[in-house]
Length: 311
Image (cartoon, rainbow, N blue to C red; front, side):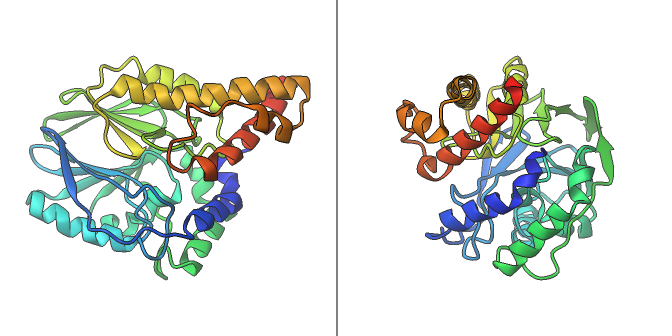
């Protein structure tokens, strides 16, 4: 089953967390390296109050243009970001690269498309983009006030399906497919000149990841692959930028591996989920933000996944 098929539980979780919504905050650029700024989303679920500002975006400056990595969670945020970008550089926005097609990373796309940017994404996202699940998720987001009426789903102009090197304004940008993992279309972005990695939602820093029905076995393998990069800075899909790349990659990796080990053993031994969940030692992770709201769902979905894997 596709990770994207969990739209209803995802929305229910978002609404639950959103019961105490974080308020809107201005988009503040953080300079990370000679070529990159980052805009950090809130550690919260999307809400009307925060304009669905819950994911990170990055801005890459080349010699002649700007490249955005991920498109934020609403057209309103995208319009604000376009204004902020003008204060950083007079160069045009030439491209938007998507790490994946989850709602909180794509609903700003229409504004960047209007501004003339060329959109690049992994071709595995086409199935989700054209699905009833995507349409229903968008309508639910409009109904809940996360995004405004008139928000649309926007397809990429260029679909990639393998390691791809872009040379833009003399700067090399490497696109690295690392899915299926968090989603079928996970795409990481590597800047060799800055030793900077945009990891997308393969890395959640300073909070519990949302695992959903992701392919956690391949997710772990993808993190192992990213660990071979000599990254000095990592931009996660959610949470602050990391200058401790190894430590933060390993935190997400070890959490997923722990879920698989504990829930896999229970599935093999046919131990009921409630029993094994109560008996599992969560002490390494329970202090992380969103643990109480996300961990049980993560564990249960991993339990179901491991039941399938043992067959």
